[in-house]
Length: 354
Image (cartoon, helix red, strand yellow):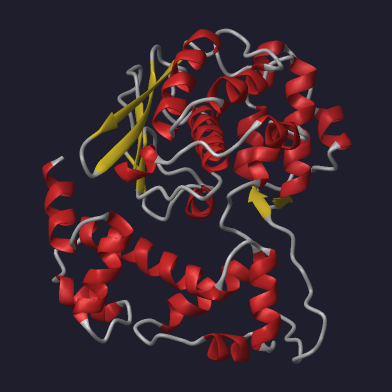
């Protein structure tokens, strides 16, 4: 790694995706007897190195090239094609919904028509909501078939990004259970979905269900977009959704990594900037350009780690608070109530009851 001195122009590193997402997106082509070579060359992607990472703009370009070539926005992964234009009509159908809950209900009804192999539903309790994506027929005889894995990845990504856009803000997923074994590229799930990504393989030949959990209050968010905003959103869509609402922006990731490595010590912006060999003003500006802030990153990191500890361990709340850098347990309680609407003990109890 080359360190830069304060005042130097920062060197930017473009966001990338793991090769597993590329090969998954290509998995439906053999069913159509299509050779991806020309499309890969056009997008400047070489898939011979399975460990390579692909710049996200090239991935988005390949996404759109494939859908147009196949006239199928679902990449030939299902029993019937999802014709080009489906995503636009999905957006238009959700645009006039009053809340995110109604938008998802409309999305479920629309996708039932154009994507009958997967059923989308919402389950809700007073505190928790779950987005459910279930097979209506086995997509493959092999649980870990790359085509099946990508089908779930793709639809969750599409629905999550659409919800974020409709609400005009990021929608945090508390956890996601995927119905297959952990794939080789699963490290990217923390950047795309949530750090609390779990894997529960379906019985071979059975029908699997993906469950994404989040705060139920988010369903009541109003839809904030209008027709003018939709025109801009559709420019470059649906491939563009792969570039939206990700957490792998360069400066955001670097700041997050330093904050996490330092726990339980709580670093200041000045301390992180010193480690980055940049001025606090430069770091602040870069985070603003990437749509975030130092405070937002610190809060999101603590939130993700707190939720994971409370659901995966029996650690006392006071120890979780201390490990996350809270000198005062009451401050952790107040923060947790802001994140989830309930106290940590109640959150843990409800999680285990559901």
